[in-house]
Length: 623
Image (tube, rainbow, N blue to C red; front, top):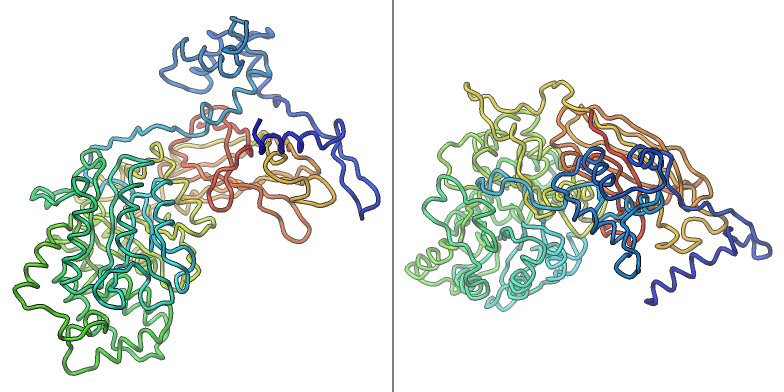
C-alpha cells in the first residue's frame, strides 16, 4: 500500500467505530454518526427489476440492463464478463461464477472509467474541412499568471497540450540585442521565454493527448531578418510535422483527419502585417482622455494586430504612446514595428522580399483583422485570409447588430475571438455567444479558473476530448434562399433532460477532516446550471444535507432544451457556511454527449484537475 493510500486508510479509520469525533474548544469531543455508503433506492429497484427480485445478477441479466436501461451499444457477453471480473476481482480468486450482488452492482456504477457520464471515444465525423469544427484554443498560451507582470514559460504550453488544447498562441518579439526572438506579452512587465523553448515543447507534447492538428497562432512583431530566423527555427524544429499550405486550401482547409500529427502556422503574411500596423497607427490617433467605450469602438474597426488591441485596453497611456508616433509626418519602419529598430537593422529590398516569401510560404492559415469595419470584413466574399480575429466586445456588438453575417462567415472561414484587454488577471468571458454564432477558435486564458473556463473544459470533453468538436449541422447549413441559423430566433423545445442527483462520496478521502468545518462534518448541497442559448439557461439546487461526508439527496430536476447541441450541464457542489460557502467540486458536461442511465460523475477542482475520489451518482434521462 502506498503512503497516500495508507494516509487515506487512516483517515477512514479516524472515526472510532462508526462515528466522527471533532474537538470543541480543545476540551471535549463532539460525536457524529457515520452513514454507511450504500446503494440508493433507485439502484436497488433497478437491480430487482433485472434479476426479477432474485439476490444475484448473472451476466446475461447484466447485459440486458446495459442495453435496455443504460442504452449501451456494442456490448457482448464477453465484454460483460470482463467488467464483472474487474468488479469481483475474480482473477485473484478461486471463484469462477460471474454474478453480482446488489452491492457489487452498486460498485460497478461507481466506476467512472466504464460508467462515466459521457462518451470517451472520438465519434464525430473528422473528415470535414477544418472550419466545420470548434477548436480548443488558448490565449497568450505562454503566460503563467496575469497579463501584465507574470512569467512567460513553456510550462503552460505543455499543460495546455496535455489537456488537449489544439490552438497555441505565441507573441514573438526581438530580444534586447535584436538578434534573437523572445515570446512575451509585449510592452508589459512579463518576463520572456525563448521561442526555441516554446517550439521544442510544442513538438514534444503536441500529440500526447490527441493526434489531431495543433494550430500555432503567431502575433508577429519582428523584422524581416528575424522572420527568416523564425522560418528556419520552425522548419528545423518540426521537420515533417510542419504542414505546408497547398493550392487546394484556397477553396477549403483540409480536415482534422487529413491533418493528423501536423503543426499548422497561422498569422498575418508579412507584407499585410506591415500595412496593418501603419493603418492601425492612423486609426489610433485619438485623445488619451477618450472614454474606454470610444477607444474600444475605434479599435474594433481598426486593423491593429491582436496585441495592440489588448495593450490599449490595459491602459490609456499605451494608446497615448501610439498616438505620439502616429502623428509624425513620415514613419520609419522602426515606428511601424513598435519602435524597436533603427534604419541599419533593415536589409535591402531584395533580401526583404525573399524573406517574406520564405516566411509567407509557411503560413497555412492567413489571418486578418477588420480593416474597414467588422461587418464589411464578415461580408467580404473575396477575402484572401482564412481567419478573422475579433475581441469579445467586438463579437458581442456584431452579434447584437448582424448575427446572421457572423454565422454565414463561420461557414466558410475561421473566426477567432479573444478576451478583452482589461482582463489583466487572466479571467475569461462566457463562450456561448461565440459558439452560438459558429466561432471556431474561442481563445481562453487556460492558466486561470472560474465558470467560463469550466464551460470551455466541459465543451471539449466532447468527442473523446480530442480538441475538435464538429459544429452542429444547423450552423453549417444554408437554406434555398440563403437562410442560416438565427441565434435570436424563438425556437420550440427540442428535447427535455431530466437530471437526478442521488448522492456524493469521496470527500473524506481527498480532504482533511477539518477542511470544510473545524467542529463538524460538512453540510453539502449541489447546484445544477444549464448553460446554452438564452432560452435554455436555468439554475437549480438541492437541499443542504447537514453533518454528512456522504450526502444523499435523491432530487430530480427537469430542463427543457431548445438547442441541446450547444447546452452544457454545470454541476457545482458547495459546503454551506454562514459566512461564505466553500467550494467542494465541479464538473461541466456537454448535454449532447451525455450517456443516459445511472452514471457516476467525477468532480474537479477549481483549476479543472480531477479529484482522485470525489464523485456524484446521478441519472440522466431524455424525454
